[in-house]
Length: 114
Image 1 (cartoon, helix red, strand yellow):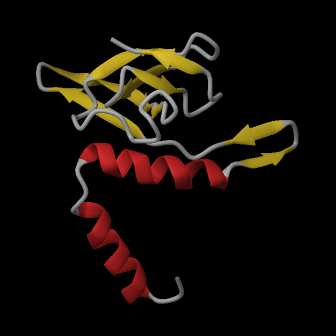
Image 2 (image 1 turned 180 degrees about the horizontal axis):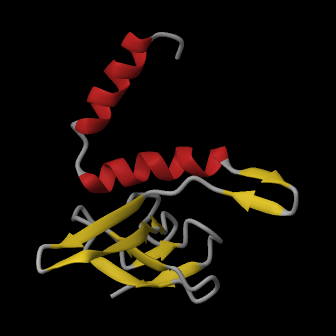
């Protein structure tokens, strides 16, 4: 992808995807951009940020967990929004997903969401 036109075209395609398909595409791309160095591992993740009108000070940030494609017969899971919530038992981050069975985007631990 070498031109701005190519990137704009790709962005327009991504904008048209429903959330569950966008999550599926990004789950294949973002983990490929991890960096290791100086005893650190940095990963790109997808997240939601929720600001509450009645509480202007706080913002809740939740990482988007990648649906367990094996559990969903190779597919991206249910065709719904990010309605399933929980925490990763390994690294204790808050996660949400379109699927009840998903993997933490940080440590890849299986998560069961409700």
